[in-house]
Every structure is written in C-alpha cells, then in structure tokens.
Image 1 (cartoon, rainbow, N blue to C red):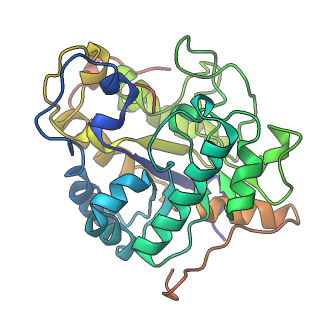
Image 2 (image 1 turned 180 degrees about the vertical axis):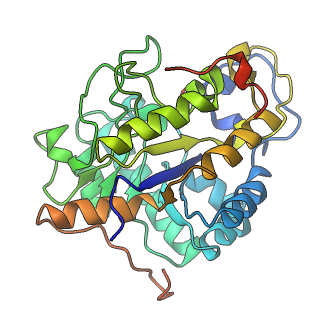
Length: 308
C-alpha cells in the first residue's frame, strides 16, 4: 500500500488572472478577460505524460462560462473541487453570502462535471469563523484552506501550526466532526509555502527539497499552482511586479520538474479519505453523481502568489 511518504498532491487553484486580488486592484486591464484559461491544456497533457492525477479547485463562475474546459479536466480523471463561485475573500462576505458562495459553487461544479465535489479551498487561504459549518452543511468532505506558515503581512499565515491531515475541529472547535482539513505544504524550519509565489521566488530545488523533508516525516506534500502563472501575462498597469516573476515558460518547466520527482501524485480527496478512515472517521465521498468512474533555491535554478 502506498503511504504518505510516497505520495504528493498537485493541486491547481483554477482562477483567471482577472480574478486575482492583485489584478482587481489595478488601474489597467487586460484585453482578454480569460487570461490563464489556456493553461488547462498544458496541465492536462503534462499530468497525463507523468501519470499524475491532480485536484483542480475551480472557481465555479469559470466553469459556468467555460464548461468544456472543466469537463475535459474531469474526464481526464482529475478531481474537481471548489474555489468558491466568485473568488471573493470570504472574510469580506457576511455569513449568508459565504453560505451561498460554497453552496452555489458545489452545485454548479457537480452539474457541469456530473461528479460529486468533496473538496474546498478558500481564496487566499481566508477562512473566517463559520466557514467550516457552511462547508459541512453544503456537503463537502474536506477543506484545504490552511497554510500553516509564518505570518506574511498583507497575505496570510501566522494562525495555525497543523502540518498534516486532521479534523477541521483542530482549526476551529466549532467545526463539524465530518469535515477534514488538509493543509498545504510548508517548508520545515523556514515556515513558508513550498509553492505559489514561493516556488517562483526560491526556485524548483527549494520545492523539491521541502517535498523530501515532509515525506521523511510521513507527510504527503500538498502543492498548489495557478493557471495564470503558466502563461505569458499581459502587462497591466498597477499589477505588482512580483506577480510577473518567473511566470510563463519558467513555471511550465518548473511544473515538469516537480511532476518528474519520485512521488505518486494523487488527488487531494485520496489523501483526505485515507487519513480520515485511518482515524476511524467518515471519509470524503469519492464517488460521482452520474459516472461510476470517478534550503531555498537560487538564480542557478533559473533554467527549469500573489494571494491565491
């Protein structure tokens, strides 16, 4: 049996460039509102080439406008999870709006793909009190919105120290017992995420080292990227320069190198289900609704987030 020492989760926060907070606050705008969507083909083909299965946490408004793209990902065997409907920060919404975001997203993604949606990731890892109750009520089985990293001013972190799968009640005592929490991977000692902006800043060797260190601790690393990081971004007035660092071709090569690492890349729900079952709990649903198939790098690394 494969253990968490052998496995890793490659996840994609499937949002468009125009939906990132850095873009929404900019003075200019891109001519194409769907910048990032084209990365879906690269990801699907590259994952297939490496025999990897991924989890795509999809903003459901993207699935609503581009259903064929999301259906193709699901048809290729990848897990589809929710990244809300509109990609607004949950802490900026009242409880009723948060509930509608998670309910609408799950229902729409299930309608588009014909498969059940078990997982959720909040934009910018922003999980205000009451979110876990709303997720459980909407039918989700696990959450992957905790980045147990040091505090990053203006971004996230500094709140939680859980490094491996646990009941969501470890994060919020009011969370329902049915909900699991699967944190994203953080570099031991350094305390920064292994992917997102940090992959682009520190290089691929930083990420690969962190994966090995977590695996030695029996933790399956949970990685994440964004589709807009994999394309050539248009220059938009007011978008911070850090957003453009090593996007496009460099990131595509980085993804290839990560997927070539000696790990079995499995969907997040597989890790969540196995961990919850081992603890004697109820596993996240792994079925479908209509289909029975279900230290840091350096510039020498240059060959190969903004807030999520």
